[in-house]
Length: 242
Image (cartoon, rainbow, N blue to C red; front, side, top):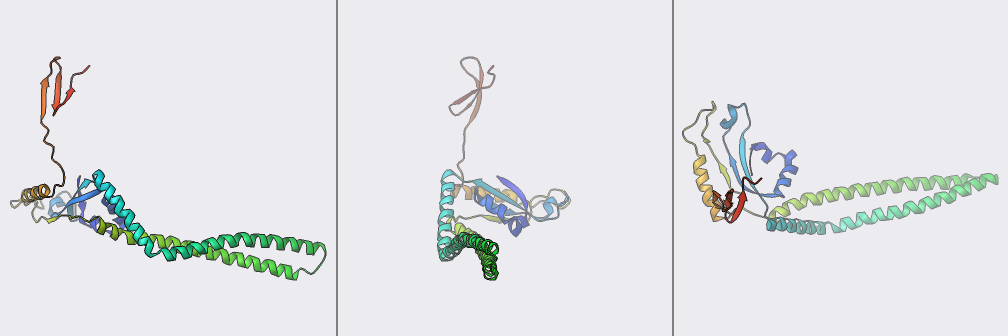
């Protein structure tokens, strides 16, 4: 698949997610920078690039998935102590939530009984206030730990990306064309370098076996039943089947 993109798309931080999506589905087999002149006649003002990709084969898809899994495991291991500590804090907060809930329930029962018995309720009210303060602090501690854990996983995700690229490493040919056969007015130019690039890239593609070339000859003929057919290799397709 080939596409024409503004050159900024290749390094715009806001489009990183889009680039990562394609990098996880296909190999980039050529990036070619072409002159801004090419689309000026059509009103475009940004410098364009040609980007060509080839969808992963089944083996490459599996390899990429393995690299991603290995990279995530390696980076996560570096932060496992932090993860364990935060998860322990959250688990402790959950347990304390239930404990404080029971304590508050008991304290309220004591307060109700003290009022019923017309006894001094100051100490019980103080106990309830203390429990509520502990509940608020506990909720804050849990919320803080959960936020830190979420940020830590985001950090792990960011640190994993370059590791994946290092593991799933391959050459990306990059070319720069100074004359693409068209001037700023839309007229043909004399020094078109694209044909030379095609020739050079064809050799590169063959040497690196980037994709297989199918040379299936297509033949149209009438079969023994008198029906017109299309033949691709040994495959017969009847064209006038009723």
